[in-house]
Amino acid sequence: MTETALSDVVSCLSDYDPNALPVALAQQIIRSFIQPVNAIEKVTIRAALDRVLAADIVSPINVPAHDNSAMDGYALRGGDLVADTALTLRIIGTAYAGRAFDGAVGNGECVRIMTGGVMPDGCDTVVPQEFTQDASDASVTLPAGVVRAGDNRRLKGEDLTAGRAALQKGKILRPADLGLLASLGIAEAPVQRRLRVAFFSTGDELRSVGEPLDAGCVYDSNRYTLYGMLTRLGCDLIDMGVVGDEPAALETAFRSACENADAVITSGGVSVGAADYTKQMMAQLGDVAFWTIGMRPGRPMAFGRINSGGRSAILFGLPGNPVAVMVTFYFLVRDALLHMMGASPAPLPLLRASSQAAIRKKPGRTEYQRGILSTDASGQPQVRITGSQGSGILRSMSEANCMVVLHHGQGNVAAGAPVDVMPFEGLL
Ligand code: AMP
Ligand code: MG
Image (cartoon, rainbow, N blue to C red; front, side, top):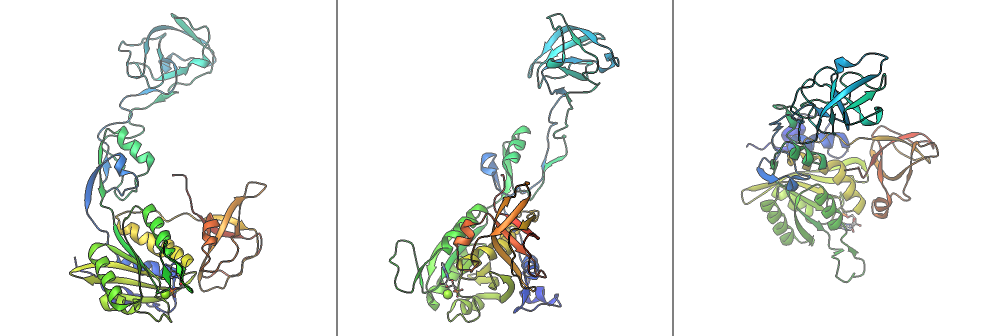
C-alpha cells in the first residue's frame, strides 16, 4: 500500500495553518491520513465482546423459525371472532414451547398454548389466559372484544430474516450482539485483530509510582490515564513507562515502539517552547506535523507517521498536562484509533443541558470543560463545571461525569443557557 504524505493531505486544504488549527480541521486531517489495519481472526462468541466485526453476519435462519405465541393462553382461528359477541371454543389439545400441537384446528376449536409454543395449523390469534372465562379441560369462553384477529402472535422471521445481514461489518460487538449471534446458532465470529498501541511519557521531571519523588518532580500519571483509555478501547498495549529527555533513549524508544505497534502515543515535549529532544526525534524519524490546535485544554500536538526498520506507525504526540492528554485523546485520537481498528462508529451524541452558572468562553477555539450532569427539580438536564479548569488539574476530570463542549464559534454562556454536553458513561 502506498502511503500518503502529510503534505499531500494538507495541500488540499486552503485554510491549513499548523499554528492555528481548528479542532474540526485537525480531526479531518487525521481521518484522511490513517488507514484501517485489516487483519481478521475468528473468535468464539464470548471473546467477541467489544471487538470489531470484520464481515457482515448473514442470518442463516429465520428467528423465530415459526409463528409462535407471545402469551400463555389459547390459540384460535381469527375468523371465528364475531364483533361484540362472546365466543365459546372447544379445547382440542395443548402446545408447549418446544413441543408443538400437530393436529389441525377447525372452526369453533382452540388449543391451549404456552408462550413460545408454535402456532397450530389454522390458528393466527392467541387470547391471553387472563382474558378468558369459565375455562375447563374441555372448553373456554372469550368475552366480547378481548382480542382482534392476529393478536399475540410472533411472526416467523420477525426478529431476524434468513439471508439478510443481521450484523454489519465494522460494528463493535456489545452484549446484545453476542446474544444475537447465539440466537442464530453462530458459535464464532470474524473480528479485526486488536490494534497494537505503544505509549510512553517523556520528561526529565517525571517519576514512576514506587520511586521517591525528588524535589521539583511529579509522578507520571499520563501512563495510567492512557492505560485506562486504551484498555477501554480494546487495544493491545505496549506500555513503555517514562523515557528521559535524552536523544539516545528517545531514539531507542521511538524505534522500538514503531517496529512493534500500529500506533505510538507519547505525552509531553511537544509544546512550542519545549527545550527537549522529543520533537526533534519525532521529526527525524518520520513525516510529522507539529500543531497548535484551537482547543482548550490541548493546544500543542504532534501528528504523523514514523518509520523504523522497514516498519511504520501512526504517531500521536500529545501534550504533557494530564487533562490535556485525556481531552486530546478523546477528541483527536479515539476516533482515529477506532477507524484504524476497522470500526465504523457513529459520532458520540451530544446532549443539551442548561448551564447552572455563567461560563466565560472566547470564540475561536473549542473548549472542553469538565462538568457534572444532573437533573433539576422538573427532571430537565442541567450541568455545572467542576471547579478550576486548569489543564494540570486532573481532579476536574475525576469528579466530572461529562464534558461540556463549547464550540469553536461560541462565546460566553449565560447562567441558565443551554450547552452541549457529552456524558462519559453509557448503559452498555
Ligand atoms: P510538557 O508538555 O512536556 O511541557 O509538559 C507540560 C506539563 O505537564 C508539565 O508541568 C509536566 O510536568 C506535566 N507532565 C508532563 N508529562 C506528565 C506525565 N506523564 N504525568 C504527569 N504530568 C506530566
Ligand atoms: Mg516536558
